[in-house]
Length: 211
Ligand code: URA
Image 1 (cartoon, helix red, strand yellow):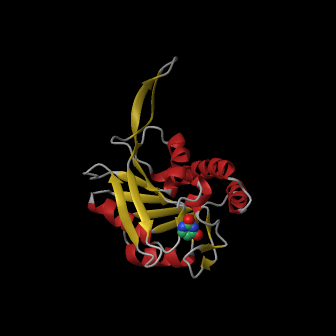
Image 2 (cartoon, protein in one colour):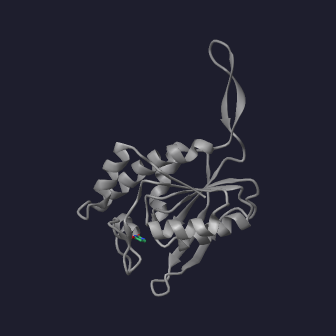
Image 3 (spheres, helix red, strand yellow):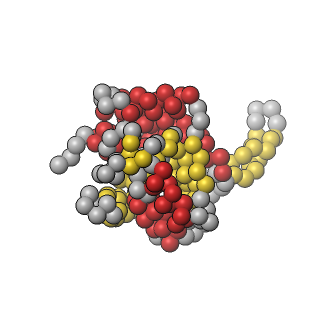
């Protein structure tokens, strides 16, 4: 497993505004999309391409096309949905599948409550969107699920990670073809498994508190 932290002043600036507890939901959603587009630029460095012949107004030329089937983008519901627009802006021809996962707040275990994905992902490149890599439990389950369906390699795009969650994920996936692209590795998890300093509950900040 590889970890890549985007080192860019605009990423750091947008993330600072996201962290601010007074940033309202509409601004939070907009900034999340912008940040994901910046992260996606790094995350798609390994996207599969092939030479294609085109006709310019002047001559014939060989350019670059995305290999088919194009990558599959999988936001993890609910908070990953806030990252989808930022991702598809960069990869508009990608297919989109959905995985609904939530953590049980008592056991902190990830449970799958919804799934809409192709049955066969053999050979597919998959981009998983999940803003907060806290304990790593949700991503671990999602990654296992996608590899079982045949995904060839998986790139996870997250806004923040806790070092504990990243370590746990690395231990389990050390030689798997997984890349995690992040805006920041924060200090730690608190006793409620929230990332510190973090940005709070990403789903609530995007979409409000649902009781
Ligand atoms: N999920 C969140 O939304 N925030 C955290 O800090 C941890 C998990």
